[in-house]
Length: 106
Image 1: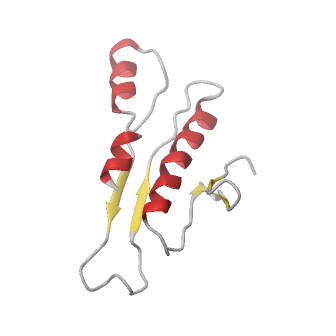
Image 2: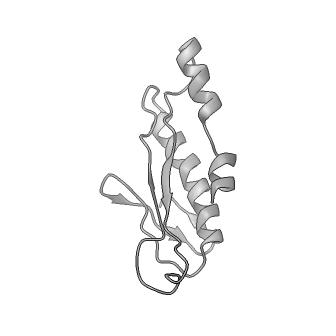
């Protein structure tokens, strides 16, 4: 999971925004992984995370949702056989079996 989240890191973009004022006002993705030995087959939360979406541009929120949905789609592929719930506020983002990805435009 850490490798996937690192690959989708926006830390460089955050640093650029803080030093130049240019770009989107991203925030990092904070997550917790709960994979305890012996608990693999028990029901419970395996992965949880959150971030604040960028909002300083008219397309910023859409860009942020698409970016993090791509990250979460990869994580879902790595955590097979789990039930997933992905949402922005109270708006659920569905899983597309055709695209094998979370589909925020549906």
